[in-house]
Image (cartoon, rainbow, N blue to C red):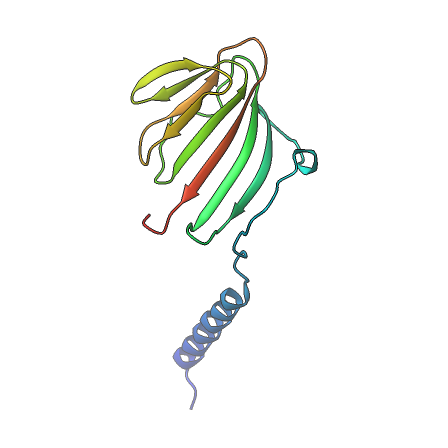
Length: 145
């Protein structure tokens, strides 16, 4: 005789099995090989603080994920509140004048400058100039994290 409990257990087992099969079918993103990212092929997506061009978010031979994007930040605005994360990142200032929160202090910098945000360190960026600021972000997640 099949009881109500047997039906509940069977239903849960079927649901868990279907979920595992769905996860197993999802293809992981392919490993990124040598690539050229053409500026003219990147779409510029409007944000509430300017715009962003997403370049890539993919694993590489040595990284769990490499993420790159280019932000255009309107004058007088910050990309977001000060924050921190495990992954490390580089920011390369292309145009404009910005202030970056680094090691607990705001530092003014401009075109050609490079900012390194270390793991779990509070950081931020804001446009203090009169023109849009454009900067490239290179962000990575290593197997160690």
